[in-house]
Figure 1 (cartoon, rainbow over the protein chains, first blue to last red):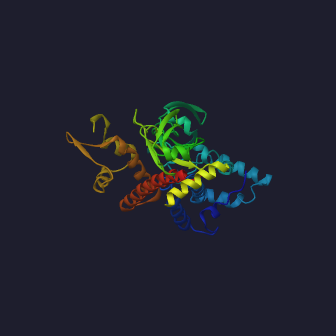
Figure 2: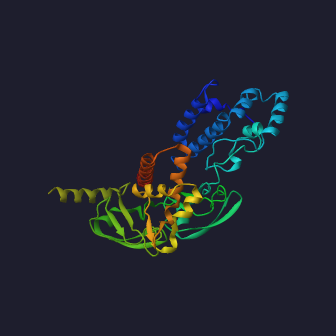
Figure 3: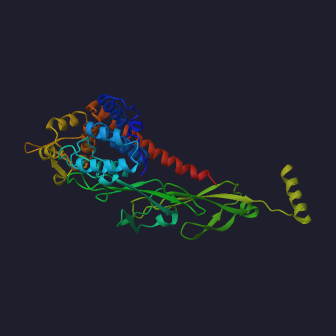
Length: 297
Length: 97
């Protein structure tokens, strides 16, 4: 259990007045409050720290105890004294509240000094519980079809339907699966953000897919039929004569499923890459030279 | 907007320990919409989370309504930018090997 310097957390000196503490706390709270910094775990952590520091330092009794034992808390004798103090202070602590925390979010250090979580809540105002954030890592292939997953959040299993076409970085909110409400308020929500990795040859742009197909020189010049991969299989494709390298063709409805639009799909764009023959034989060189002459006439 | 999803303001005032005037102020600022049904005032269920956010900002941070409105607008903007950034990042992947 590390010693926590509450003065340092609030950026004030030990001799600071109650007014200085209040001012410092309010300034930092405005900066790091979870409502001002949604989905920012660092800000949330910082807010918990400054809230804890404020709860101790804004209360004269607790501040005295902290000033007396805080620095040397590691010494056994003084820890004993702190333990005695703890018995007296249990339940008697009055401080400023925050509606955002669960009881376990106070540091061990706070618990050792003041007993329990030392928390008092402002009146009996009911607030919705804290929203939990979770990240779900999926493969692009996983999100081609709507499927169910079981997530374990804080020891509880949650069965979740993942709609086809969900995007990388997208978030969905599952009501009532967050932290417990304050003073009997409703539970918070679980916010799941998706991190989707792509190991396929296709590149995704929302509902559209992109890929390249190699065609030989003769098919590009004279036209023909090639077989190309789509996300779910293979299709035959007619190549027009005199197709240039870099030509893009669209396969309508062969892209990715549109999110929450059943039966709707994006398109697949295929870019042709014309492969030139290598290791030409003497005969081939002769023929290409003849072709070149024809072109230069 | 179905009636089942409307919530009476009076019990909300007791629940959050706030004055009725807060709701009218939120309405004036365009943050929530107050609906009158048979002389009773309601807000839509979806707006509860915004009301809670405002109550927290006022109680925890002592921000007045002008400040709250500014914060909410900026948060909306951040959210929009975050979505846009996410879309741009996903599009950039198209050009990455």
